[in-house]
Every structure is written in structure tokens, then in C-alpha cells.
Image 1 (spheres, rainbow, N blue to C red):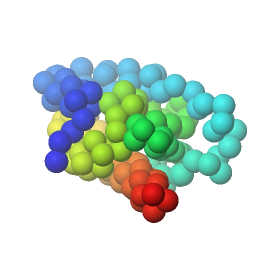
Image 2: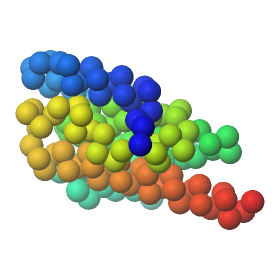
Image 3: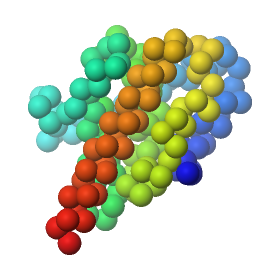
Length: 148
């Protein structure tokens, strides 16, 4: 299993950073989530809720015909840890191929070294987000394969 290069760069930066820098970096990533695109804005029924997250958190993965994946997240500003995860995933995975994302280790986030700055419950939330992203992507890949 291989982590996509953009995401691996983020993992490496976090892994090498001191504890206080990791927390600040996570907060920085929380501000990097782009707003939902027009076709998803105001349409919570099109997003999947991640119940394992402590704050309301929603996601959507879209696989295009060329295999490129775009991911979208919605979380309140009052949830900086969860938004930080979303920012990391957006920067590290948006524009990767479905194949790359499905092949990455689901527990890649352990390498970020966040266990010393966030609670285990919050780390499990990251795992749940990755699981749902991969499931959504796999379902779309399977549906496209069935049509061919």
C-alpha cells in the first residue's frame, strides 16, 4: 500500500514537527477547506454524515470518468480538529486517482503523529472519515465497471 505523494508530504511534515507545531498546523489546515461547490451547497442529502466524529461532519467523494477523485467536506468552524483532518485530506487527496486513494493505507493518519495532541476519540474520527471516503469511491468504481 502506498500513500499518494501529496498526502505523504503532509504526513512527513507532521511527523517531523514538534508537538506545538503539529497543533498549529492542524489549525492551519482547518482553514483550508474550500466551500462546497454549487451542486452540493445547501444539499445535505447529497453528503454522507460521519457519525463517529464528535462534531457534525459531512463528506462526498466524486469519481470522474478519467478516474480523478474530488472530495468535499462540510464541518462547522467550531470544530477545528475535524476541519483540520478535512483540510489535510483535501490537500493530500483531491485530484488523486481512485486507484491511488483505494490503495493507500487506511491508517495513514497514524504517521502524522497527532496522538500526542488530540484524543484517541478524535483519531478514530479520522479513521471513520477515511473509511467512508474509500467506500464511496469503491462504490462509484464498481458502478462504472458494471456499466462497461
